[in-house]
Length: 69
Image (cartoon, rainbow, N blue to C red; front, side):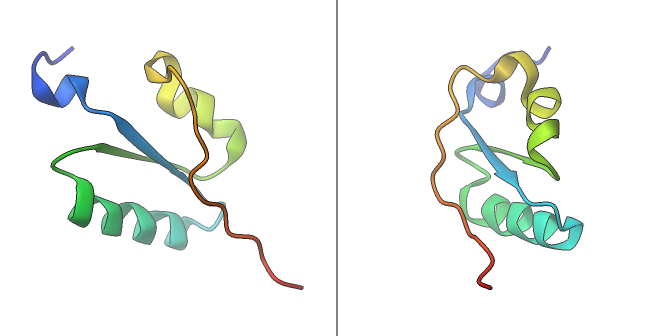
């Protein structure tokens, strides 16, 4: 595993079941926060654990968008 600043960065995890939206959100976050945070994306809640694995010490939802009916 890589040692140094990048290995210690806090992870921002995005989750969206639409692959296009997932990629766009991750891309925008990397542009704004990529130097400070490691941006990781998952396309389902089930994949969150396998995506972040043991790196996840705590998961704190920041914002959640729900479709309007």
